[in-house]
Length: 204
Ligand code: SAH
Image: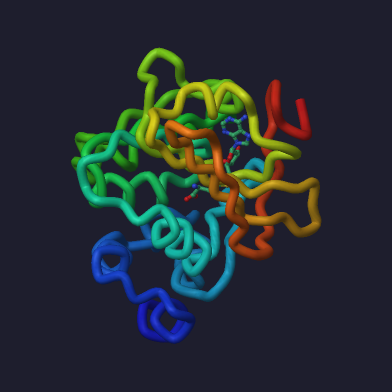
């Protein structure tokens, strides 16, 4: 997976490649999908949701250029895969999932892997997680129609917010960087995510 799907497509950040090697993706997919865990695609995890394609997760981690001391908020825990990778890359991770069953499942799994710097919350993540704000980095794993204002508010200065923007079938991976002089916006090409739900999502 690392050599064929990531390195050949330009993911060369050694820290990103290292964590992609260390976290076993098969632990995060349902039993009947286990044999497909290392395929170059998103896979169903139940409740109409997916675990993202390995390349897309790696690309997001690469774009964020994490130094290691960050406090990160992830919106859309899903399987918990990206949260587990983030746990090895940064100081503290808060991850929010709106579907109670997925939140519960990932909490048990991440707990069993002894990733003690990840904190799982069940809530509408389009509102962020104000209890723990501000964050150095916020990463959204579902497609938003536009940037949810609470997420920009809960970002430190300087801070980075990475979110797929669009209403499907394709979205644009978009990085917002908050600096003293304002917010800049950089686009990183097309992607396909499940829709963000909740107050600032596309679905209620
Ligand atoms: N990072 C996940 C990707 C999961 S797909 C992984 O590595 O597996 C996106 C997830 O976002 C889904 O589980 C979906 O239920 C969740 N989601 C959608 N809208 C949300 C919202 N408003 N708040 C929190 N989670 C949300």
